[in-house]
Image 1 (cartoon, rainbow, N blue to C red):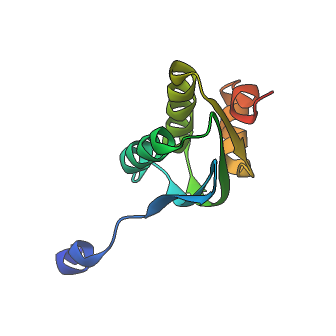
Image 2 (image 1 turned 30 degrees about the vertical axis):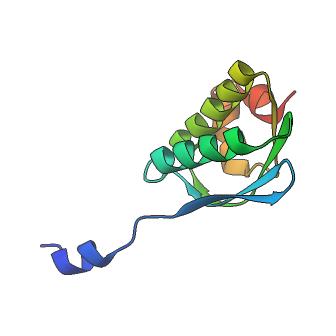
Length: 112
């Protein structure tokens, strides 16, 4: 039987999105099923608050990532397109590139 007290104290995987320079945001932590909703919402708030017409999102500090994390990035791209803004990702982790390649959307993710 699992230790319920230990499970209650365990923190969910974290994700943060913060401006690192004008027009540049850094994502740190996990982009997974456990963090997808928070990442989507925090990312959309951050991107919407950026005054620059073109935004770069640095993913170099992303640890764990899965298909839900890829879905978050696609949602951010859709927001940018609807808003008439430019959005590109840099330092995309290989895990996300591999998932995007399987889904045949690597070019979309990498701006090709």
